[in-house]
Image 1 (cartoon, helix red, strand yellow):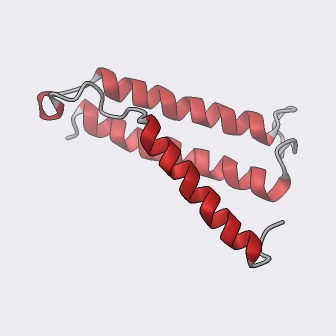
Image 2 (tube, one colour):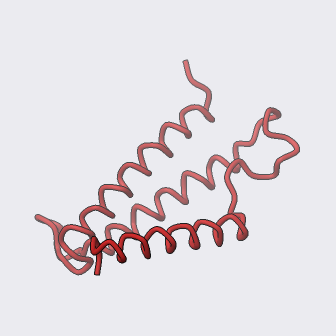
Length: 104
């Protein structure tokens, strides 16, 4: 039997997988493409929806902090310096791929 926290980590993984799926659809078909019988919902709208689902589960995890996480205030939180470092790293490898002629 799982704890609530274990259940929420599983939901987080599930939502991240759905976010990844929508990102791939944006890559393959474009952000404005309406996939299947989506009733006019574009890929970027679906991606945004999945991102918000991920954030919702993160909020639930942060509300469910147990003693094992103390003194941390959040299970998952944004660290601007780490975000900036990731942006720089992705840009560096994009530049390499561009120099190799793999992307425009």
